Each structure stands twice: as C-alpha cells, then as structure tokens.
Image (tube, rainbow, N blue to C red):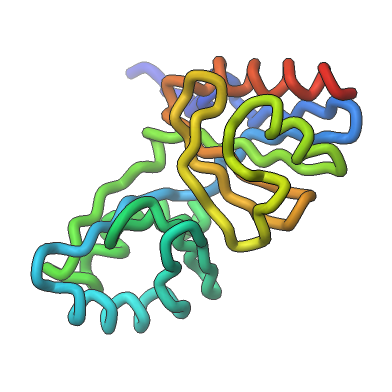
Length: 188
C-alpha cells in the first residue's frame, strides 16, 4: 500500500514562513475550521447551545470572538467560521454537530481554506496595497470579507496594526502567497 503524506496548501510538508522586511507571512496549518449556520426558526435554541459550547458570545457583523478553545468569525447573517486547534479538533464538524443538534448546519472547512498570518510593523501598508478593506481603521476583533487582488478572502484583525489573518480558498494558496510576498517586497 502507498504511504500518503499530508501536504500544506502550498504543497510542502512543513508550513512556509516568509520574512520580508518588517513582515512575517506565515502559512497556518494547525487550525481546524468549520462553517456554522443557524437553521430556520432555530435561533433561540442555537444561541443557548452556542453559548454553552463556545464559551463566548456570538460575534456581531464585522467581528470575531474567542473563548478558551474556539474562535468564531462572523461570515454573514447567522453564519460563522469556527476555528479550533487541529490537534484536538480534527473532526471539528462532528465535535460541533452533537451539542448544536438540529439548530445549525455544520460543515468542515479545514481543507477548503488556506490561512496566512501577516505580522509586523508595516502590515497595514501591505494590506492597503492589496485590498480595499479599511485595514488602518480595523481594531482587534474586527473581521471582514474583502477582495485581495482578484481573490475573495476574509480579513481578520488579530492585533490592531500589527497582526492580521487572511483566509482564502485553498485553490488560491499559491496566488495568495505570491501576492502577499510581492507586496511585502514592494515596501521592504
């Protein structure tokens, strides 16, 4: 039987970290990701189940919130991405589905998305070259959908002016990484 080896979205065996000027661009592969959407007529029951499960209130539009284990990112009306450590939440959809029951539709998104964390003093300068999101005004716990070059992405402000995450479709991983690194070199 063939031996299979896991690959990162960029096709390597280890996540890539690119240090360019004052920036570090890091491929994040240790997070599980699921989408959660409230089912019609189940909002009250979902909110109670979610409060018990996530250990934090559901974030409003344009925000994210974090509990002890889970991070929730608002993605649309009554919809969120849920992040958790991959080592303990490899089957994140099953872990979420049982306590949420029929109040939500849950789908594993771990292998469908790529995440790059960008940190450093010039992160806002980089983002202003690539996307129309108001990154200079974004505060910790802000999140928004945006275009980054030609790619539809989620932009998450982890630390005001210092640390952002970009989530994009996994099929865009190489293009997204190239865009980030090219813009970083332009301001280095």
